[in-house]
Amino acid sequence: MNGYGGKKRSWKTYFTLFLLLTMGGQMVALAQSPDQEKIRVPQSKGDLQKPTDGSTAVVGEEERGGSGIIGRSTRQQQSKPILPLPTAPQTPIYDRYVDQTNGVTYEALFNLAASRNRNLLAARQNLAIINGRLVQSGLRPNPTLDTEYVTDKIVGSGQGEYGISAAYIQPLELAGKRRKRLRVSQLELEQAEKELAFQEQQLAAEIRSQFAEALAATENLRITEQLIAFNEETLRFIQLRFTEGDAARLDVNLIRVEVGRLRAQLLQSENRVRTALSQLRTLAGLGSEENVRLQGALNPLKVMEGLTLEGLQLAAMQSRTDLQAARIGETAADARLRLAEAEAVPNINIFGRFTQDKSIFGLSSGGRLVDVDRKAAFGVSVPLPFFNRNQGAIAEAVATRAQTRYRREFLEQVIKRDVTVAFNRLQTAKEAIQLYETDIVPRSQENLQMIRTAYDLGDKDILDVIAEQRRLIETKQQYIDALKEYYLSTVELERALGTRISK
Image 1 (cartoon, one colour):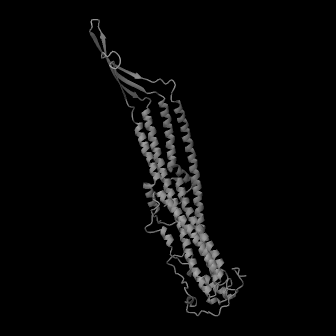
Image 2: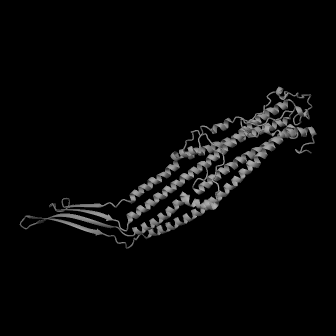
Image 3: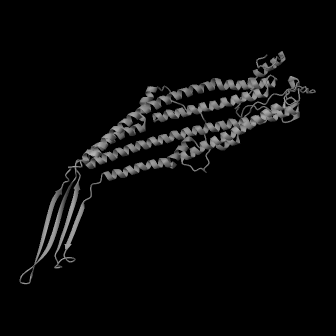
């Protein structure tokens, strides 16, 4: 048995194999760039019979093995054409979704989201709400004007007696209630600003993550589309060989099945691209009818060097805006408690009152005596806090203060955990990319080249080529997933830190 598991071959076969394998500079990888040399594909029966190196091909009488359905021709080895190597075919479906010149970048999408994302716009209204609350907190109580008019014209004797009174009442807040209300509202405004900043950071991270998902989906679409074009090219080549009796019908059917399988995979890949772009439109506040074409590549982000877990955790404690908001919320809870205690002190009302009464008295001589009295009064009204001393509100404020402290402490634990998980995830993704770039992908491409060469020499079946091609596809897709994982882990670490560490 030889190294490929086939039957024993002559020394000429192995010598030919050695020459083909040593010509690695002329062999291209699966995702060959457009500027590389393309292999000419025979388009007719005559092309198969005309070598391009000036030699004379031996096209003798063919001796078919079996019925020609699964048998293989026994033509002389030197006349057997080599399988076409993959080039860089056009990708019209991929080009619908990616435009490296006029496409939209992540930065452009975030700028759109900053002005069009409805959830973010709704969050900004919290600032307007709290600003209104801040204005209301600084207003003083309104005074009260009481007036009264009393007459006997409607009921009574109807002699013209009347009474007029007017009172001005001004409430006065004690224990610094207004100042403490202002302090609570100011803290709430600061907390809302930090929460809005955190929401903007989360939106930016979500757009970056979804942008990476879309780039990965388009890259898988591109690979699948290129493989379909290459397999269709291979199918035409093998059909020509079949007409010459140099390939079995099974080889043709296997390639046809592989092309059909890849077309089904292409439909699924395109659907994933559409889904990712739809989510990007929603995040950016775009309509479903607006066309979005991406610009960019799924390259690993450049992360700052010398990062340590302890340093990152310390940085997160200082830069996370949601933690800053939680700390402000804890201070605001203390301010609410002081306000509740101040509201236990009742307000007083000062007032001034003016009255004028007209009285008429009848005399025995038949005349009348008219008496007009004018009075002014001043005073203070003080509620007596016998029953309601704001006990419930004070107890609520005490519990709220403890609640905010516990939430802040829990958030600190969550931040440390998130930084640890994201940092370890980033390190793992970095090591995985290095393995794929330095070992897995190059060896997988080399394996496919060797299998293809062995097929050309008759030591392997087309099924082996297809199987190795599928493994290369899986490897390429896994490599794309590794790139996406590195990109997402970087974004996740920045999300956990609350600041950028990449370019």
